[in-house]
Length: 197
Ligand SMILES: Nc1ncnc2c1ncn2[C@@H]1O[C@H](COP(=O)(O)OP(=O)(O)O)[C@@H](O)[C@H]1O
Ligand SMILES: [Mg+2]
Image (cartoon, rainbow, N blue to C red; front, side):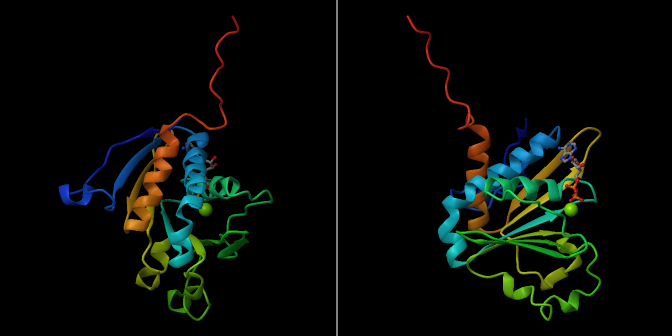
C-alpha cells in the first residue's frame, strides 16, 4: 500500500483551497505504484471540464526503471484500456483514443532533437480534449507546454519515493482527487455486512 505524505515545501499561501499543492508518496512495491496510477485515472472523469477546455499534461521524471511507464499503464487500465500498453521508448508516442478523451503517452528518452518537437506535430497534441503523459520531459526543455502535474520518481532501497507537484489549479484539483481516492476505502471492496442474527 501507499503511505501518503503531507503537503511539502509549500508556502502558507500555496496551501489555500484550490491552490497548487505538493504531495509525497512512499510506494513500497509495484502494486502501490499501480494504485497511484489507478487513482489518477479514476479521478480523470471528474476533471472532464478541465480536459475539454484546456487538456491536461502530466510530467513524469525519474531514472530508467523508476516506474513511470508502470504508473501510466495502471492509469490507462483505470480508464478502461484493455489492450497492451507499450512503453513509447522507441516510438516516442503511443496514442490511446478513448470515448471521453484522447490520451497521449510520450517518452522522450531517445528524443535527440528537441527543436523538432513542434515540426513533428507533438506540440499540436497538447490541446483541449487531450491528456498528455510525458516521460523524460527534460529532453524537450522549455518547448514542452507547461505540465499541470509533475511526478518525480526516486528509487529507494526498496520501493519508490514519488513527489507530486501540482503546477496549476487544474493539476492541483486532479492530484487532490487522486489522493482522496487513495485514502478512502476501495470502492471495489464492499463493506462487510453485519452478521445475520
Ligand atoms: N514502487 C515500486 N517498488 C518497486 N518496484 C517497482 C515499483 N514501481 C514499479 N516498480 C518496478 O520497477 C520497474 C519500472 O519499470 P518502468 O515502469 O518501465 O520504468 P520507467 O518507465 O520509469 O523507465 C518495473 O519492473 C516495476 O515492476
Ligand atoms: Mg518508461
